[in-house]
Image (tube, rainbow, N blue to C red; front, side):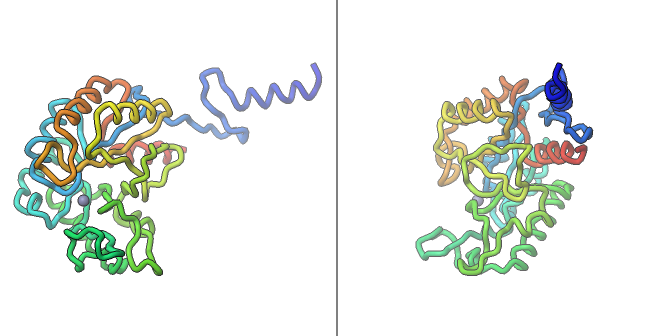
Length: 282
Ligand SMILES: [Zn+2]
């Protein structure tokens, strides 16, 4: 055998092992990323704005199916302020209480943006210090409910910048000091655990969607070993201005429960921790 062919075979042997795991040529082993318990990919169901139907209907529905989700809490909303015990129960059942800010600030770069939002909470007038302090207090309020010091952030109105348009600050600069991860902007792309930006994961919308559409997205994401992150508001008409039909939501829950051996449905904080633990072992 020629010398070059032997060298090529040695190089190939260094890269590919019989079990398919990859070994770096430097000799340091690089493990393949694995989702837990033989699952192929992950799904997070997140529900925004702390509305009563979340603790009255959605959390019990998920629990009955053996699933857990992330509830993004706006602290200064009646659905949270008036029901601390109900949210304590949601957290004790294993759901994440995610941070969705104190006052739900959003960008109002033009007067017609978010007419429901007071100018006092225009994110384009926020300073980084104000945002950081408000998020810190929101974290503390949630900690007093669930006892947890680590949680994810659900970007309000999917905004990822504060301050005036000509001098914006990206929230990703502040997020690592306050949160293990943030849902980030609405980009409709699944998250690759091996190429991930924890400060802005990226997500899909679920309001007004059908089960079939979402099933196809989920199957596509898990076929690539990825994590798909959904943002919901209400479930059923009358629960929120933005909502998914209750029947479509029920079909999605049944499908995720029936496919738990293939699809890991879990709160964002749990999936983030799994990926970070893997990264720490590298
Ligand atoms: Zn919201």
